[in-house]
Image (cartoon, rainbow, N blue to C red):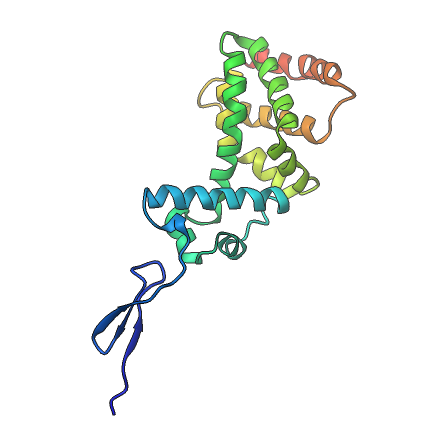
Length: 213
């Protein structure tokens, strides 16, 4: 008797089996997020949420595609297909987390100009980071992680946000990176109180930018 050929058709495909040329339904439990609606948007959203949880718990550099795939209940291929690799996911998580802070600070500093805007943007950003639960988790997870803090300081994303909020000249990445470093320094090594931190920014950061401008 000839052996029947059995071919499994992808879990994320139509979920059917081909047996001796006949197709029968094979009921495989597939998560709802992979079915119906805007499949790509739903998949990306679920992956980003899981990645955010992992980064908040383990730190930026500890993000692992295998752990992420397990948490989302999908394959590594699905992760890469919908959101890309580790670098793209990490950038997206930072961007999504930062946007909440950026939008709030931007509204407050919009009418300000020059050094006043710079100082206000720095102080408000620090305050928002400290008051945001997710930011607190992320900050706590990478405390002492020199490589991870360095990545934040050098990231084009954070430099872009700094340029926008502080009203810096576009095309001056060094100025933007310095603002990012000032913010990170005070987040990780805070002053005695908010007023003391403000004096530090006014006395040692603002004059440099006044001369620079």
